[in-house]
Amino acid sequence: MRAATGEVAAVLCLLALAAALDFGYHHAEELEAYLREVHAAHPALTHLHSIGRSVEGRDLWVLVLGRFPTQHKIGIPEFKYVANMHGDETVGREILLHLIDYLVTSYGRDPNITKLLNNTRIHIMPTMNPDGFEATKVPHCYYSRGRYNKNGEDLNRNFPDAFENNNVTIQPETRAVMNWIKNETFVLSANLHGGALVASYTFDNGNSVTGSSKGYSRSPDDDVFIHLAKTYSFNHASMYKGTGCDSRQTFPDGITNGYSWYQLEGGMQDYNYVWGQCFEITLELSCCKYPPADQLEKFWMDNKVALVEYIKQVHLGVKGQVTDRNGNPIPNAIVEAQGRSHVCPYRTNAHGEYFLLLLPGKYVINATVPGFKSMLKTVEIPDNTANFNALKQDFSFSEVSIRTRPASCPKVPLYQELERSSAAVKPTLHLLVLMAAVILLFR
Image: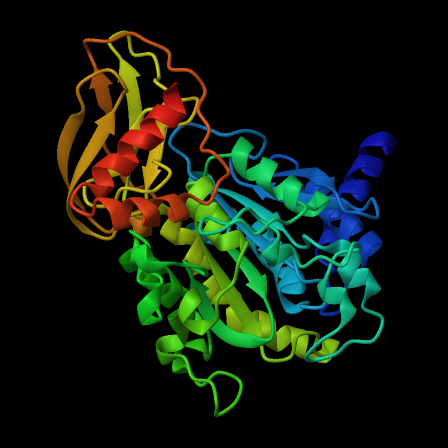
């Protein structure tokens, strides 16, 4: 009896610790302790792991939340939030801790949060640049050396670029995130920054193929990105007003195409979209990069609804499996909506799954297994975000029973090659690019 009482007391103690998150800045040891406390208090709902280490050896912690937190389950999409990749941009780091607190304490109590966690696997990385945060000894609204990692590199200029050779030395933090993206089936993501108040969407870089000569770098899914950015801005307390941080800078509806704002090479959101098959936007959440701690509670309240509503958008569009005549999954099959070919074709994962974020409407979905006839299906996509379940459309290749070999998209400036092809043979551009990509993927 005494032992049982002790166990109950220990659990209550852990719950009290997890609930005691204050509105202050949490340094490395405090952040790790909090994440461990949350996991200990909610072991069935959370999974805590490190995806790698920073230059100085600090863990890059990720807390996964959901009904199946330890592994991917067929049909359940993967979502992620990443904050503090610039070490002196601190608001996102803290509001993600409060988001974690809100999700775990609302599960089983709030029907919407319960459904969200039952149907979504949510990955939260409060800090991608722990070294930069610890190096920021004097908080500043505009600039400090803490922006960079320990090697003095800007992590949001450190990813492979789809448009040009940026010739960067990939940093440990960047490599860890790249491997993380490779090993999960992320569908939707956002990275949290500071220094402005706007939702920015891909592309951050561009060329003539994407229309950058007109000051706007358009992706094949531009309509979806605009919707995603507006979902956040219109659910934020004031971002939608578009007033920015001073009279010289305005953002209609509180959103902007990244390139239209300023050109950026090697950015994380473009990398996610091109090579990770993951739609990511960049959220600038505070005019002051490192505001006083007494403002953090207001930042949380300003962003609380938007953070949750944005996660729900992972259930936009259509999802399904591609299988052979025996019902076995076919990995690496290309599945895309007609008219939305990606320069690195979107492929099924090891379970034969695909997830395509699409706005409500009628689409033709094309599933292709190299060497066999493509399969086309017309779908009418409703808005299923409130039901936390995208439209399901499977494909079965009854005439084949194969296992395709693992495929990877080359880490070269793909849009650079596309631009060259465009200049040479404009009428057959998309066909040539798709054929070249398929050859690279499956040879």
